[in-house]
Image (cartoon, rainbow, N blue to C red; front, top):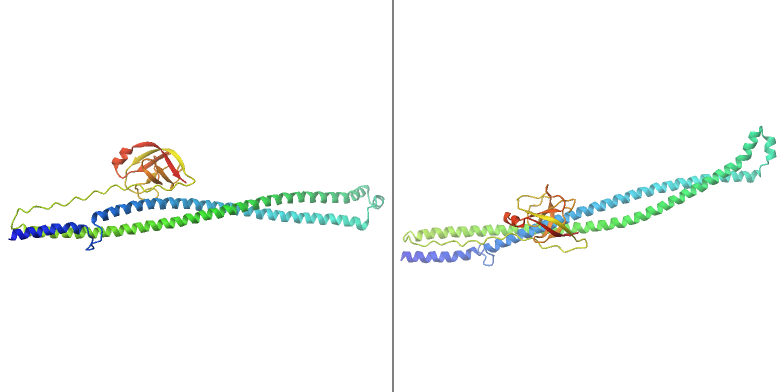
Length: 352
């Protein structure tokens, strides 16, 4: 009777262990361990893709902010030039006014005293040189003032032309500055959105891992209770069969993120693509993973999104001493995949 009862109890425990591995903490609707593992892997893959997108957006934002700062600096230089030209115009106009006053003084003297009589000047002069000098003084003074006025008006006209050109440049730079600021603002908003997505995926992945850990602890406790009762049941009849634990399906390597949508700045580039598999972090601070590509920043700027045939969407997020010119390094999940890829010449698509 006892061996039969022990066998029935053991069978009931084994039959109840399977469903317990598929439910979390007594919740019949909760996903099982295999579903939670798959969900955790999917969230990790999405988080890695979101991190790469965030890095690319931050790089684009940095370039846009640098461009906006450059435009502002150029506009400030134009403003300084306009102030300098305006000051020179003021000085020239004041000089014209002085020259006009001097010419007016000469003309008024001629009007009040009449045309100078050469005979009177000669008879009243102490010497011949004095007489000649007095005869020439009126005409020379008038000629000099007229010539000065003509020169000053020509200079003023040239400065006015420069002033108009600088005003036109300032308007163009103002429009460029507004466009650059708008682009930077849009990219900043995109960066905030991608950062929130990364934070949300990370939180969701942490919650999924915690649920999986609790489920595995509950399953382990159930296995231990089953083993203890099975040992007690087989104490009277030593031939009880052992129950084998079902193997866990291996987790597949994460796939590459979806390819980004093409933009107006999309172009292609022929490169040599070399595969590698190493742990650690990239030069940009991001962890290595699928979609991380090492580049020569003088050829492909860091943060650039691209599509590599046979590999998938990727982001330039790393550099290397051997990566010079038209060469890129592709991170692979395993050494075997890196060896299988080797070195290939491919035409990549770069998204502007």
